[in-house]
Image 1 (cartoon, rainbow, N blue to C red):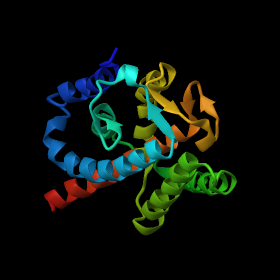
Image 2 (cartoon, helix red, strand yellow):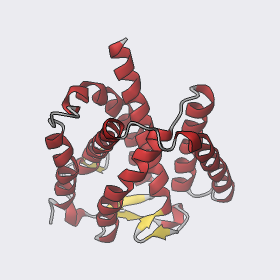
Image 3 (cartoon, rainbow, N blue to C red):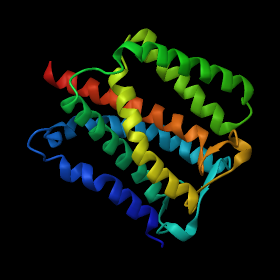
Length: 224
């Protein structure tokens, strides 16, 4: 059981890596555009992750990690910020290849505005909860920047995020039900969907949005 979290990471990335060599999508040709964004985003989230362990926002069950730590974080948690974004960018690229129409393009702006308003409301109500504060503060900043400064259409991102919720519920459901990651409900809204804290959905959304925007940036820069 010590290898449980490591096994989850391995299974998360296994099929995206294997299917990257599909003759139609050929996702492996985009790998070099992914890793700069993974590095940048990973550093940001690992700093917060480290602080969260210090502030007792969450902790890791020693029964399910191999015992190698960096900055109070099990090595599996560090790998999580590589395997999960990689798998979700794979989903994003596959959807872009197989679904030519931007299904959510026309409602992208309203979705973003609703999420921005939700973030503001929850920040005002739960300003004293560390996880809620960081999660919705980040989402507010990232969405505002992408929508109103970059003026990007996020329709394809929202579709990919919705599809990624299926593996999200599997992976996070396992992590929080065993539990491998243990949350302190005094630092979040204490509202869960199943065993998954509500904030996790939007923490994941911010992480994936930053990764995908950086992926698109590096891909565009390479092709110009």
